[in-house]
Length: 466
Image (cartoon, rainbow, N blue to C red; front, side, top):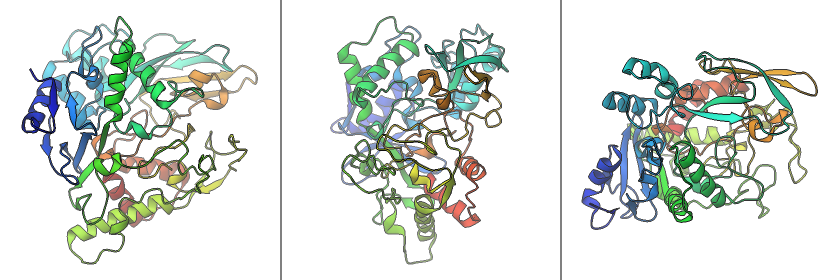
């Protein structure tokens, strides 16, 4: 039995060993810069690459081990072929292959209702419908101590039971790759605090996930937690090849995971409101991957496709967007005293400011309207009431407010890393955008950006290539 699947002497059998160990497809390729081999996976947009900066994949790392009581491992919900998360398509394939017995179909959080007793295949299809159609895992949250609001009522299409102090929230598993670009851990930042580092937060999150999702009977040892975090923070994933434009790291472009792994990052880098600790000035052109393709000569199909990607990058960087009504941004006073007015003219990179990664480089969860009941009509709707004012609001997910207890934090979430997007639909925390086209449509409708047909097509080409 192999302990380590190496990119060196054992490279020839790396793909087969990994596939046998964790049940995923893919193949080994030397398709990036230099002699960096990586595991590559086909997707609708081309080819995604993923590799570890350690040079190998240790299949006995606790990330791949069964440390709980329900058969789950970290890799159960963080699949390499799905950019280290899951997709409905892959979940459905696992359901068919296992008749619903794959460990991902565990009723502690995989089913719509906690502890659903579904037994037959048809019962399981219904019980796990959100996981199978949207790639959503149930997150149970209790109201924090001394909240500014209470739960008045819930409209639950799954009839899971009354909820007056707790909630069942449904969220996409975040990728366990490209973690070096995080400023907060988890969609609602609940694993992060003002007094801990991201490294400490990831250690805590690894243990919580093992105790929760894998229903482990014991905490991880310090060594196990550190091994998981070391593995995760060394893994990078990004689109490597586009079906029309070819190699995304050719012609001077710097696409793919190898270049991404070398991208500098620190908390506050390129922050738009002056929270960069080095005093650096915000550059709205946060993405520079495809700059060399901006002025290509030639009218061949490859040059045309590359030109579209480069133009889409420019749209993302510079297209004006009137940002209004965004809780956590508009009228927000930041720690340096800066107040962002409402409305405020920004760009996509106002919130996706981390260079060539697209995260928000400081912890700044925002409410952009994704928890409005009309956005995800397949989710329960909670009516929350402000204790002090009596105001009410309907939401499918209170977000950060379930940790802070603050009325102003309802519906606030962080933005994820914007790499390897083509490998991991659907999008947003609730899986409400089935495609990248739907993501663009959401932002068009929310902020009335006014994209032309050409800008929309170019922006889509760029997002597909990340």
